[in-house]
Image (cartoon, rainbow, N blue to C red; front, side, top):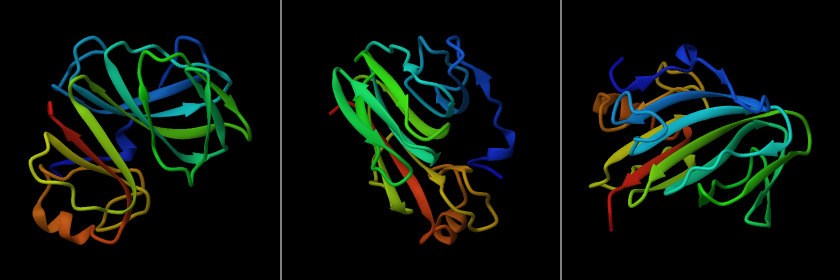
Length: 179
C-alpha cells in the first residue's frame, strides 16, 4: 500500500554499545545515511542503561511506545519517560544517558537536521498542518486494515485511508522547513 511502512517489514540492528537495537522506518532523502539525512524516523529497543549517541546539528524527539519507564539525563536535567509521557524534544549533541526503571522498552525517535524541525503529538490522529515538508503518523492501535506501529505517510497515502484513520490513537509527526 502506497505511503505505508509496515511494522512487519522492520529490521532491527544492534547498537555499537550493545545496549539496544534500532530499526530505521523512513529517511529523507531516500537512502541517506547518518551524515546526510534531512530527517530520519526509527524505533529502538532500549535494553540496558547507557549513553545515547551524539548527533551534532540534529534535533531529536523521543517518545516511549511500550515497555518500562526510563529516566533520561539530558545535559544534566532529568526526564522521566514512559508509555504515557508526552514526546521529549532535545538537541542531538546534548549529553544524554538513559537509566531503565522497569525493564526494556520500545521508543519512537524522530531526528531532523537543523534548520528543519519536527513536532510530534500523541493522541487521536491529528490533521497535520498544511505546508509542512512531511506529515506522518505512527499508529498506536490498529485501524483501517493497518497494524499497530505501522507508519503512514499522510501526504503519500490514499486520502480515503487518511480519512479512515481519523479517531485512531497515533503519534502524529509534522516536519517543518526553515522558519
